[in-house]
Amino acid sequence: EDKVVQSPLSLVVHEGDTVTLNCSYEVTNFRSLLWYKQEKKAPTFLFMLTSSGIEKKSGRLSSILDKKELFSILNITATQTGDSAVYLCAVNGGSNYKLTFGKGTLLTVNP
Amino acid sequence: GAVVSQHPSRVICKSGTSVKIECRSLDFQATTMFWYRQFPKQSLMLMATSNEGSKATYEQGVEKDKFLINHASLTLSTLTVTSAHPEDSSFYICSAGGVAGASGNEQFFGPGTRLTVL
Image (cartoon, rainbow over all chains, first blue to last red; front, top):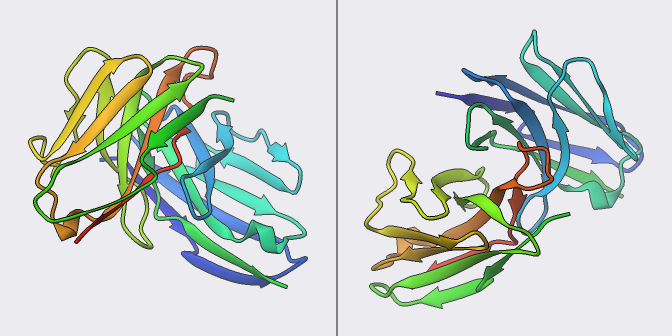
């Protein structure tokens, strides 16, 4: 059974801090790893990673994948209160686009 | 990007009634749609995978006779919660995969439906 573990489960920081969120996984047939941001409604897509060592970047957010060690990190620099959300990591481990989600990291950014 | 809508966004019903939730892909066709359930402070749990024109594949522990899924076209999937009970109260989210022009691994999520069963 595919498994995704995220850490920490929750994190409280001050505006301007840099945070690193972790995601480790075990899948039988890895295809891709995805990061989502979830506020009050459904998740919104951030990144999809398929290759090791290639950093994906979007503004203050970046992510990288290590397929040898089976983990990914999501970095957020110069955090803002609007970054407060649950960040979900998911892995596509087979056919038919099926995703297995981690429990998420609840990030709270205080002013 | 691809947009997925859900209707209704919120529903409150009495115990024993059935509730239908619609999931539509707007301006694109999706060969596969997924239905998730999310309880407070928990992650998304996949309930079932539906492919257009065929029977849905349910995850272990999900009662197929209770959660009826119909995927009649490439733009519409419905989830019917039959004889709903308070323990079915949850946030139900659909997503569409297999989108033409997308990477092939990405899913596009609907905004979710908050179900409250009294």
